[in-house]
Image 1 (cartoon, rainbow, N blue to C red):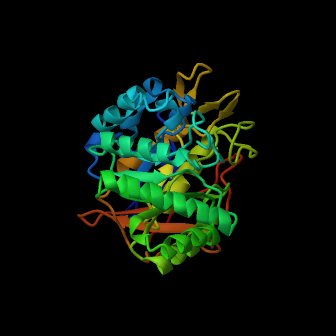
Image 2: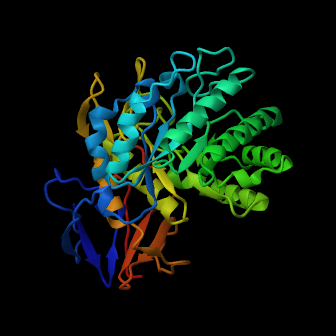
Length: 413
């Protein structure tokens, strides 16, 4: 992949970031000079960044870590979201088999990738143990004590490596009753986590979508119990075919959270797009391709970066949900869950993580002059310690689905 110099700036346009090595010849706009290829950087070689990747569903064997682990560190992200897998770990009451997690968590850390653990789902060996998939009920009744024991054992075992624990995934929050139930579960579980590790970071809510109303319901309950101190971050999952369409709602969400406690920060906790039509899960009804998936991923990640939001790309590899495929992976999987090939999005994200790390500082209120009659651009500026600038820009009102690719613009700032 080659980038180019534009006047006095280094311009990092999405079209440039998306070019893969197999493309014959870089596309260099007239009047610009090719600077060379972006060298991928391993997670161990990056001091810090904004990025994480989804590595969920291993708890249900929808992906197999051994099949794709060699692609994790080279992606350049430094955090991976995994799920705790109570049902996979405790198949016999009171007996924990940590072998599958012992394979994953230490190896991720050795690659320079810190796991962040989403504590979900339930365990059907107990009455009231809760369900084991998306939308499942949380543990209840006598099973709550069993949940507490599992969570405590897991935190105690992995606290030297895992620093952040997220409480449940996409709980039902449509009513005050639902939100209160989740709030009580959140407080209970967060206190279990902190009893084992007082320094643990707690991520709350992991809400489906971007709803200030739902977030307010949860935080109202937690505040009423005097327990806002238990929450460090709240996460949300902003699926939309146009990545830019959610940022007004994200701004409202940030304002809502600040109104409860400005210490609590936002995290974009799960987001991705499919690479083909006919799959399963969010956004699966759109006419996706590997190219449009890559453009979508870059717009989401850079849009989050421009708003100082830690950003997750979902997921590392395609996931087989029983007979259905979720094709949001950066890696294409075979029927037996082995790796088929890396997608364009894998290379695109790899290029992005190589360029946009913590050595670049966002230029607040970046000023620029767009071409005549171009009013729908997202433009953001960054600079390094030497003052060399990078600019990102794209058409914010255009969906990424469908071909040909969205046009991109750049100009003298």
